[in-house]
Length: 174
Image (cartoon, rainbow, N blue to C red; front, side, top):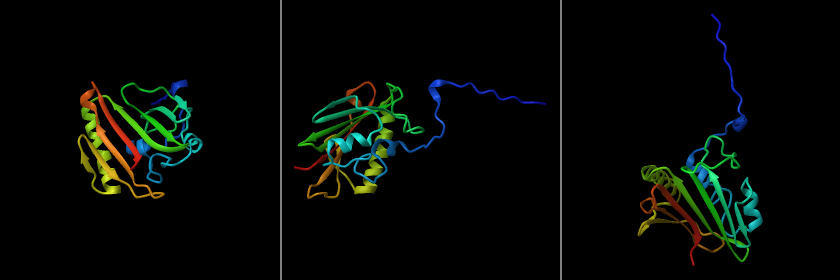
């Protein structure tokens, strides 16, 4: 008895070594910085060099990325974006310093958004303590850096859309 295995090579999937990460880590980073590989008050050049793709939009005070939600191959940022499951990141600058980070996370259903929100709430609560409910948002206070209090706000905006949508905002308190 002989078994023959045949592999079909496809140009669209030439990924050799997966380095799988959790969805939470893909969306907000590994915890070494405030968000992904950046922290508020960084300059625009430092922020853009941390992302592994060219910005979809860039202005003097704004940098925007659309990114695939690929946890198996997190470095495949230049692949096509699944229109049901992806996220966007907008870095906003004031005086050449990063002043706000807006991340919108799009998933196929509102139940998927609710499940992901629960995972993010667990992460932020473990890391920063209980968040304060402010309307539809949950707000966590991060440790002070450079004399400023940083906050992160999480909200589920799925009810306003026909799909799941979460919004995550990092900002310095005035």
